[in-house]
Image (cartoon, rainbow, N blue to C red; front, side, top):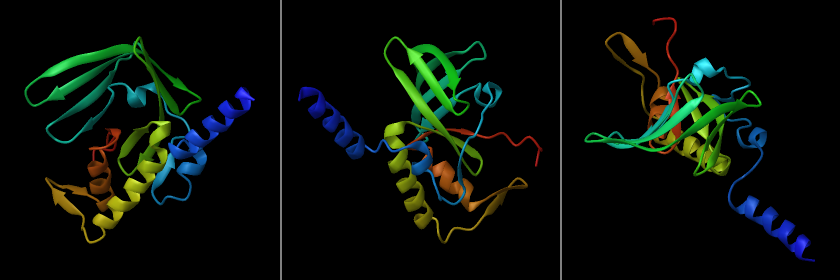
Amino acid sequence: MTKALTIIALFFSTLLYGQVAKEAAYKNIDGLTVADSIAWKDIVGGFYISDGFGGYNFRLDSNMTFRKIDFSCMARFTVDSGSWTIRNNNTVVLKSNKQTLYFDIVKFDNFYFFILPTQRQKFVADLQSTRVKFKNAKPFTIDDKTYSVNYMIGYSLVEKYFAKEIEDITGT
Protein backbone atom coordinates (compact mmCIF):
# COMPACT_ATOMS: atom_id res chain seq x y z
CA MET A 1 0.00 0.00 0.00
CA THR A 2 2.86 2.40 0.82
CA LYS A 3 4.43 1.77 -2.58
CA ALA A 4 1.17 2.56 -4.36
CA LEU A 5 0.76 5.82 -2.42
CA THR A 6 4.35 6.80 -3.18
CA ILE A 7 3.84 6.20 -6.91
CA ILE A 8 0.60 8.21 -6.89
CA ALA A 9 2.30 11.05 -4.98
CA LEU A 10 5.18 11.11 -7.48
CA PHE A 11 2.74 11.16 -10.38
CA PHE A 12 0.82 14.14 -8.99
CA SER A 13 3.97 16.04 -8.04
CA THR A 14 5.21 15.61 -11.60
CA LEU A 15 1.97 17.07 -12.91
CA LEU A 16 2.02 19.96 -10.46
CA TYR A 17 5.64 20.95 -11.00
CA GLY A 18 5.65 20.99 -14.79
CA GLN A 19 7.79 18.00 -15.63
CA VAL A 20 6.21 17.08 -18.91
CA ALA A 21 7.99 15.12 -21.61
CA LYS A 22 10.50 17.18 -23.58
CA GLU A 23 8.85 16.45 -26.91
CA ALA A 24 5.40 17.46 -25.65
CA ALA A 25 6.58 20.63 -23.91
CA TYR A 26 8.16 22.25 -26.96
CA LYS A 27 5.81 20.91 -29.64
CA ASN A 28 4.15 23.32 -32.10
CA ILE A 29 5.81 26.49 -30.77
CA ASP A 30 6.67 28.70 -33.74
CA GLY A 31 10.41 29.34 -34.00
CA LEU A 32 11.33 27.00 -31.12
CA THR A 33 13.19 23.77 -31.87
CA VAL A 34 14.68 21.10 -29.67
CA ALA A 35 18.34 20.60 -30.50
CA ASP A 36 18.49 17.17 -32.14
CA SER A 37 22.20 16.96 -31.59
CA ILE A 38 24.71 19.38 -30.19
CA ALA A 39 28.49 19.09 -30.21
CA TRP A 40 30.60 20.05 -27.22
CA LYS A 41 32.32 22.73 -29.33
CA ASP A 42 28.96 24.50 -29.70
CA ILE A 43 28.60 25.04 -25.97
CA VAL A 44 32.18 25.26 -24.69
CA GLY A 45 32.52 28.66 -23.09
CA GLY A 46 29.27 28.21 -21.30
CA PHE A 47 25.90 29.80 -20.82
CA TYR A 48 24.47 32.46 -18.55
CA ILE A 49 21.42 34.06 -16.98
CA SER A 50 21.45 37.80 -16.33
CA ASP A 51 19.27 40.78 -15.61
CA GLY A 52 21.88 43.16 -17.00
CA PHE A 53 23.36 43.95 -13.59
CA GLY A 54 24.37 40.49 -12.44
CA GLY A 55 23.61 36.82 -12.77
CA TYR A 56 25.15 33.39 -13.03
CA ASN A 57 27.44 31.93 -15.65
CA PHE A 58 28.20 28.25 -16.13
CA ARG A 59 31.70 28.35 -17.60
CA LEU A 60 32.20 25.10 -19.54
CA ASP A 61 35.78 24.23 -20.40
CA SER A 62 36.97 21.93 -23.18
CA ASN A 63 38.39 19.51 -20.59
CA MET A 64 34.75 18.78 -19.58
CA THR A 65 34.90 20.72 -16.31
CA PHE A 66 32.70 23.64 -15.35
CA ARG A 67 32.58 26.51 -12.89
CA LYS A 68 29.38 28.24 -11.79
CA ILE A 69 30.17 31.92 -11.38
CA ASP A 70 28.02 34.45 -9.53
CA PHE A 71 28.74 37.81 -11.15
CA SER A 72 27.75 41.44 -10.91
CA CYS A 73 29.20 44.69 -12.13
CA MET A 74 31.28 44.81 -8.92
CA ALA A 75 32.48 41.23 -8.32
CA ARG A 76 32.80 37.69 -9.60
CA PHE A 77 32.78 34.56 -7.40
CA THR A 78 32.99 30.86 -8.20
CA VAL A 79 30.17 29.23 -6.23
CA ASP A 80 30.33 25.68 -7.59
CA SER A 81 32.37 23.48 -9.92
CA GLY A 82 32.40 20.00 -11.32
CA SER A 83 32.24 18.08 -14.58
CA TRP A 84 29.91 18.30 -17.55
CA THR A 85 28.81 16.04 -20.37
CA ILE A 86 26.27 15.83 -23.16
CA ARG A 87 23.73 13.03 -22.77
CA ASN A 88 21.52 11.66 -25.57
CA ASN A 89 23.00 14.29 -27.96
CA ASN A 90 20.77 17.09 -26.59
CA THR A 91 20.91 17.21 -22.79
CA VAL A 92 23.70 18.96 -20.89
CA VAL A 93 24.49 17.35 -17.55
CA LEU A 94 26.41 19.34 -14.92
CA LYS A 95 27.61 17.29 -11.96
CA SER A 96 29.19 18.75 -8.85
CA ASN A 97 29.52 17.66 -5.23
CA LYS A 98 26.42 19.77 -4.47
CA GLN A 99 24.02 18.68 -7.21
CA THR A 100 23.47 17.25 -10.68
CA LEU A 101 21.58 19.41 -13.20
CA TYR A 102 20.04 18.24 -16.47
CA PHE A 103 19.32 20.91 -19.10
CA ASP A 104 17.25 20.51 -22.27
CA ILE A 105 18.79 22.45 -25.15
CA VAL A 106 16.32 24.36 -27.28
CA LYS A 107 16.98 26.88 -30.02
CA PHE A 108 15.06 30.10 -30.51
CA ASP A 109 16.30 32.65 -33.04
CA ASN A 110 19.99 33.30 -32.26
CA PHE A 111 19.97 31.62 -28.83
CA TYR A 112 20.38 28.21 -27.33
CA PHE A 113 18.33 28.03 -24.12
CA PHE A 114 19.22 25.59 -21.37
CA ILE A 115 16.01 24.58 -19.65
CA LEU A 116 15.63 22.42 -16.54
CA PRO A 117 12.86 19.79 -16.80
CA THR A 118 10.86 21.62 -14.11
CA GLN A 119 10.97 24.81 -16.22
CA ARG A 120 9.62 23.37 -19.48
CA GLN A 121 6.02 24.57 -19.25
CA LYS A 122 6.98 27.90 -17.68
CA PHE A 123 9.53 28.58 -20.44
CA VAL A 124 6.93 27.99 -23.16
CA ALA A 125 4.40 30.20 -21.34
CA ASP A 126 7.02 32.95 -20.89
CA LEU A 127 8.00 32.72 -24.56
CA GLN A 128 4.39 33.10 -25.63
CA SER A 129 3.66 35.99 -23.24
CA THR A 130 6.86 37.77 -24.30
CA ARG A 131 5.73 37.45 -27.92
CA VAL A 132 2.54 39.29 -26.98
CA LYS A 133 4.59 42.06 -25.33
CA PHE A 134 6.67 42.48 -28.48
CA LYS A 135 3.80 42.18 -30.98
CA ASN A 136 4.23 45.81 -32.13
CA ALA A 137 8.03 45.81 -32.11
CA LYS A 138 9.97 46.36 -35.30
CA PRO A 139 13.45 45.11 -36.25
CA PHE A 140 16.23 47.66 -35.82
CA THR A 141 19.81 48.08 -37.02
CA ILE A 142 22.92 49.08 -35.08
CA ASP A 143 26.33 49.25 -36.79
CA ASP A 144 25.05 47.41 -39.89
CA LYS A 145 23.65 44.52 -37.79
CA THR A 146 19.89 44.03 -37.87
CA TYR A 147 18.14 42.68 -34.77
CA SER A 148 14.87 40.83 -35.35
CA VAL A 149 11.83 40.84 -33.12
CA ASN A 150 12.58 37.20 -32.23
CA TYR A 151 16.08 38.26 -31.18
CA MET A 152 14.56 40.84 -28.81
CA ILE A 153 12.21 38.19 -27.42
CA GLY A 154 15.11 35.76 -26.89
CA TYR A 155 17.26 38.44 -25.30
CA SER A 156 14.50 39.31 -22.83
CA LEU A 157 14.15 35.63 -21.82
CA VAL A 158 17.81 35.60 -20.73
CA GLU A 159 16.64 37.33 -17.54
CA LYS A 160 14.84 34.13 -16.48
CA TYR A 161 16.55 31.27 -18.32
CA PHE A 162 20.11 30.18 -18.99
CA ALA A 163 21.15 30.88 -22.58
CA LYS A 164 24.01 31.15 -25.00
CA GLU A 165 23.92 33.42 -27.99
CA ILE A 166 24.77 31.48 -31.14
CA GLU A 167 27.77 32.90 -32.91
CA ASP A 168 27.22 34.33 -36.36
CA ILE A 169 29.64 32.17 -38.32
CA THR A 170 28.89 33.92 -41.61
CA GLY A 171 30.19 37.25 -40.33
CA THR A 172 27.00 39.07 -41.31
